[in-house]
Amino acid sequence: MATQVSSAHEEKKPASKAFKRLKAAGLIFTLFGLALFVYFIYTTGLSEISEGIAKIGLSGFALILFIYLLRICVRALAWRLSVYGPYELSFRDTFPAVIIGEALSSMIPLGILVSGTAKAVAVRRKVPLVVGLSSVATENLFYSFVTALFISLGSILFLRSFELEAGYVWLIDILLVAIIALIAFATLMIVRQWHWASAICEKIYDKGFLKSVLESGRLQVRLFENLIYGFYRRYPSRFAPIMLLEAAFHTLGVVEVLFILSKITSTSNLLSTAFFLETISRLITIVFKLIPFVIGVDEAGAEFVVKTLALAAGIGVTLAIVRKARILFWAIVGVMLIIKRGLSLKDIRKVHEEVRDIG
Image 1 (cartoon, rainbow, N blue to C red):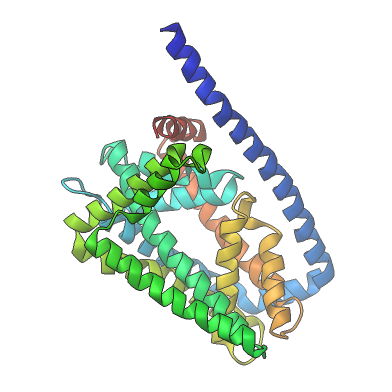
Image 2: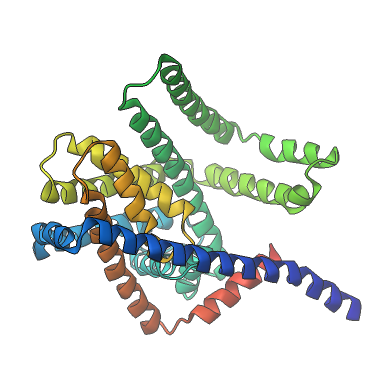
């Protein structure tokens, strides 16, 4: 018994150290983001930013909040379709839970690590925790796949917008073909239910390569395959609707940027610019999720795009600040829902750690 306790304690030590490293990294990145934010505010000028915000006005900001409300709705609907029977969740269950998850993901440095758990905890009175967690994981897989395609397509089209050498043009075309081929192959894998990924991981592990990574990694890959293939076997008709809902989430993001740009600039090619800006914003959100509200880096990314496209300076910063205000509004709503439901970050983290230890 004493040996088991000691063993469990030793297993938790690396996880604890990793968590502390993440916290330290989160703090460093946050300070870096704050410094960037101050820099861009200073270089752009408060008067120019204020002028841009004034052009949007209260009614315009209300429309921006509504567009994001629609984005929350489509994620909530996608999650609802991802629940395994005999259990089910209504839109009234998933909608507030998504707001709670997004609030935690935006506000705290390690929010991305607990946002999914928070969603499952928020609906535990409706479905068992394990059902909530598996449905969140399923929806996240669909979301991640569509997001990867969105970012890849946006990045490639962004590069195609400029005069490049023939070699680079060929490379971009090859990447486009590769993306299309990857989609086709992934679709075929799901339909045929090939367990190639886990089989390859097992072979590499048996050969003695990447032992430390594949010790638990190969099991996670198998779990991923079983989750997706099991869902497809039971609900093949749900695949297309969920994918379309995830695509709608990104489309509405482009619409939001398009509306803001229409208010603060008179430049042409607004649609392509909005698409590129949303692509970069989504990429930054993923890479710098350790930074609360992606402060600073979001402004930097937006400014990079507008300068590359030869737009007026300060448009990117104004855009990022307006969207940040929108995030803050919905984060406050999320906090209110957390308080109303009697949830606490401590309890959510505890559940997350228990699930992580089991996994």
